[in-house]
Length: 251
Image (tube, rainbow, N blue to C red; front, side, top):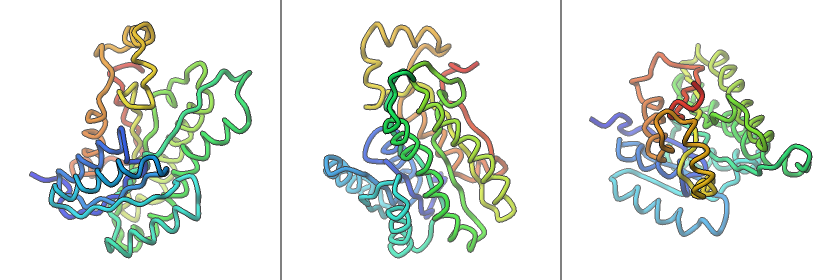
């Protein structure tokens, strides 16, 4: 059974990692996909993903757009509506990390992380709720992190941005629930992606694995499966929640 048949979904930051896995999972379940990538270096990967999604029998299109720029978000959503006609699901996945000890962290590093990780969620949500409110139906899923729940040394900016997403999610859920718009967050633990490639160092990996009851890092597909659940009608009575997908790290 396809859980998202003929739904139109936006996935930001989908040229690689978790975003790519979500786009593929959604397409496998019948959703049409509009996704973003931000850099010219990702254009080939984005084109390959677009081709792969189309091969799954759905409509798909890659858009070069920076989720941390309000004007670009506005133009992107407008283009998606012209191309696809509606927006049923928005997955705010775009994110970066610039880890540094607080004493060494520069204002520029702090602002870059907040802009891409937190501001982008506000920018995109502000745009997609307009057609969703008109349709009296919509589903917004924000990618937070277990670090936003627990905190972590050397990741003050990342933790602050991801914790902010959780508060934002709860507020949107309360504000828009009466319009049949749901909003939830996912808090992944350590996931095997380019962003966490430093974990491939054996000593570093072993340090984190000892704190994870399931004794492994997540695969991108693990997070995509949770996202699919929240995007589908199987979670129709769930809103304002943060689902931890961390292998038990934050127990």
